[in-house]
Length: 281
Image (cartoon, rainbow, N blue to C red):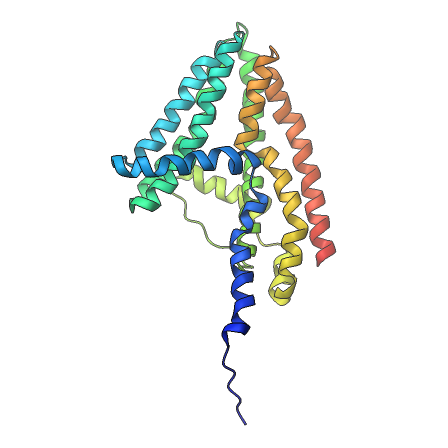
């Protein structure tokens, strides 16, 4: 005898509530500065930008312009007021970086070209900030070498950080396999491959969660604090450290922090995260 089970509102309500809770959970791993400053400012600017008919690509270019101006001020890092101005302009870039995507979706102007422009502008900001600082030194050659090593560390750390975040968010959506990502230019294809190798690929925990989806909530709750600690590898954190190093009178401190400090933190958090996943598995 076949029995047909009809879901009642009472039966489906807990499931719907749980789905809604999971959808909101990326806030659990978000950088606090995004939650409290950058995202609220971007949201506040969204309505005026829509009324004025501003194109999202213009917002992306504006953000990159803020980065270039920040670099011009940071070239005078010996002057505290110039450093403060550079820091505020970098905050402006973060706000624009949050606004362009929101504006593209809200205005229906999202496009592959827009995503490419957004990505290129984001990649270029740290270049246009760092290079003026490098060339502010009389002996800029060894400083440039230090900055290049730091930039390589930055790229690897960021790829791993973004990969871990994306993996956590897809698991929160109930997706336990790697989702293919399209690349808009060779640099992004390379970045995606590094991200997949370092953090975004399928892990043993994916197989466990696929076989036992009832463990998903425990996984999200147990790993969210570690993912939130990873925000120290975010662009927001780096923006603050650049300003602090310049105010301390030695921009080299930022590059040392990236090469030694952030690398050690990334390795330590990676080991903790894998250990937590093994425990849950």
